[in-house]
Length: 50
View 1: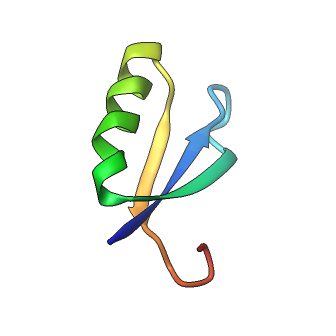
View 2 (view 1 turned 180 degrees about the vertical axis):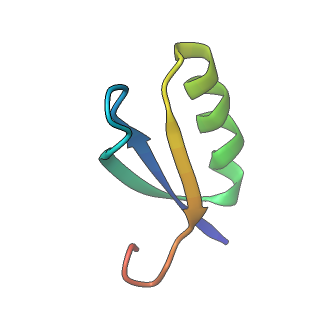
């Protein structure tokens, strides 16, 4: 399964950029975001996002 991960703006919460990754990469990205204090939004990737 693939997921779309969007990095969110700290001020208004809008998506700054996004990437589509496989399930094995999600945990690493979440840990990295938590370490740096980055806000992210994760959702299952649609075929249009890939």
